[in-house]
Length: 386
Ligand SMILES: NC(=O)c1ccc[n+]([C@@H]2O[C@H](COP(=O)([O-])OP(=O)(O)OC[C@H]3O[C@@H](n4cnc5c(N)ncnc54)[C@H](O)[C@@H]3O)[C@@H](O)[C@H]2O)c1
Ligand SMILES: [Zn+2]
Ligand SMILES: [Zn+2]
Image (cartoon, rainbow, N blue to C red; front, side, top):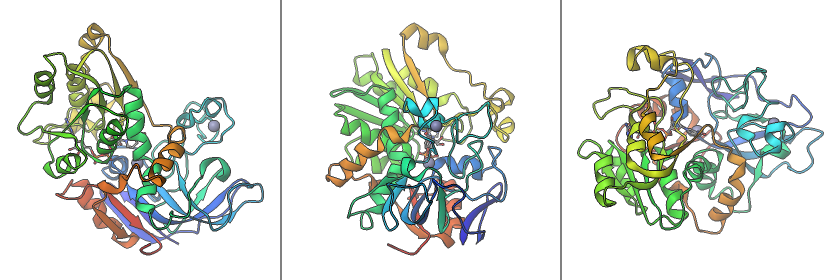
């Protein structure tokens, strides 16, 4: 089968790899019809993780079941399913509590937790930017879709990661009806966080970034854009809130945060949020931060290369704020968000700028990595256009 394989920093090639196959009685095999490129893939693409060369990327996957293992009882061949990027067992101490983002069974390293498809430090699993994908514990991990699945897959594929992840940011930030919410980062995740805040009934939502094309997409859903090349988000938000700040905020940038000129500083968005959010407000950090950053020393300095990010803890403590962090537990939200899509109440595909074939993955990575104008979100269709 064909797959998009990581060959080293800024090199992805599409080539033949062994077909995905059933390796355990609970596995299913999915023919991937939609698979997204994510901002998380870019950390790996740029060589800013210890992702191994020769592995297939892709953790935002949707497709049609083509084979089920002998112990699979719910999922049937022919059904369309969307797969949470977290691979989880359903029966470990963490999964029992709904913490599928930190499953203990699927992570082979006993001192770590959590697994994902085609992801650094999240187990040996291949990614879904390929014709076929092996899904462990298919009955637990696959979310089945209804009759409109094939037709609306560009909406449903957002359930694999960024829609639940954006929603999780607003959950950790405790966004409630009427709240004023500030989101840092208008990439796909930030746009989904802002969209989730709107869906949860926030009274006013701002989003800060230095890419005008991404800010325009946010404006389309009624979110107030803050162009950081022209304005300081802290001042904009305080000005609008009698100097107090937003009720809560979401960090959707991660450790490669930078100023509009491109100078990296992992604390930029975090400290912006601590300053922008009012006393006792909550902050949800879904942007990725890592304990080691192989490419970080030149870009961010030695401390940040070892995951030591200088945040304004004194101000945060003084304001009595809470910060939530980590990978999103996609399964906690994906069923409800699926039903919002099915019921016509949510249409997360508004962020999609490109639908391409698998063969176009190398150039799609280049454009998305450069944050080229108009490249907001790429969906690949490895088995032809739906
Ligand atoms: N926690 C999770 O489960 C989870 C899931 C998916 C993605 N992520 C992470 O979320 C982050 C965002 O993902 P994405 O797909 O939207 O990526 P992206 O890189 O496309 O978007 C990040 C955006 O942040 C902007 N930005 C950079 N520095 C900024 C600053 N100082 N202030 C404001 N904006 C700034 C960039 O211009 C860009 O538009 C990444 O770190 C990704 O790895 C986390
Ligand atoms: Zn992702
Ligand atoms: Zn588990």
